[in-house]
Amino acid sequence: PDVLSTLVPAYLPAVPGTGWGRRPSFEYTNYNGRWRLWVDTYKFAAFDTFEYAPNRHHQGFGSPDRIGDWVYVHE
Image (cartoon, rainbow, N blue to C red):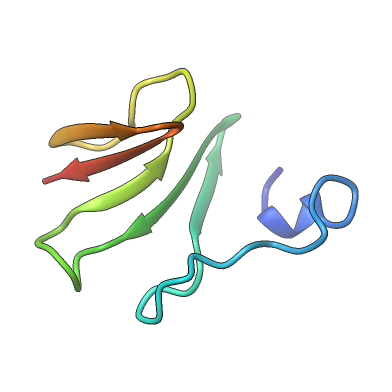
């Protein structure tokens, strides 16, 4: 989808939040069918990101640590 809210209510009851007070919402882009879902964590540690990347490589630069379907990227 072009925006996450398109998934509501067919696939999700609501767009979930991150659970983090400083970054309550996920970032999302869809460019030519290549989507990316992430949270910038730079207020917590450098310019790191936490990305959803099931069965594929993360799209950012830096050193990735896989955590299930997510990747924490140390930039």
